[in-house]
Image (cartoon, rainbow, N blue to C red; front, top):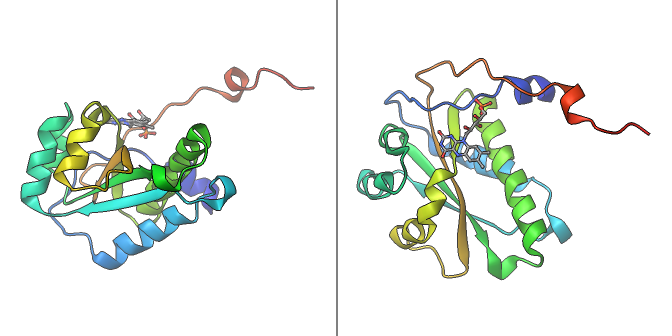
Amino acid sequence: MILQVIKSRRSIRKFTGQPVEDEMLEQIIEAGTWAPSGLNNQPWKVAIVRDAATRKAIAPLTRYSSIIDGAPVLLALFLDTAAGYDRTKDVQAMGAFIQNLLLAVHALGLGGVWLGEILKNKEKVAQIIKAPDTCELMAVIALGHPAEKGGRGSRKGIKDVVFYRG
Ligand SMILES: Cc1cc2nc3c(=O)[nH]c(=O)nc-3n(C[C@H](O)[C@H](O)[C@H](O)COP(=O)(O)O)c2cc1C
């Protein structure tokens, strides 16, 4: 049930050495592509990073380098501004895309974490993986087979979120 998947997803930051099959990655990325986007413009581009040397070059670009060092796969997620039409809506579509990816990772029994702190070095990441000039890094997802359970998770209550009922 989708609600159970949504609520049980936690960020996973430690991974076993077990490799992630290509077929699973395809399923994850395909799930991402079924996200909604304004005018159905689908402005996303993905770099799949398995290569150890490339991961090693990317890791020092974030304070969360140990997560990257321990992950068998990184997905670098880009907004292709060439496909964009409205900055706010394109970025919102990317958020939907990224969340779909994370939910698929969890639904397949894998674990992953959305890394945003690395965006302070987004140009350097783009350079390392030779992203097209029109592509702007929006997030890196580190993923693999989970070697930890993930936190209990805490969220604001509905009362703190809903401010108006008409
Ligand atoms: C935009 C964004 C940026 C994030 N950046 C990082 C990050 O750089 N490093 C990290 O360990 N977690 C990062 N996270 C994961 C959050 O810390 C995590 O989702 C949040 O604490 C809630 O925990 P949960 O995902 O386990 O429910 C990021 C999440 C989002 C949505």
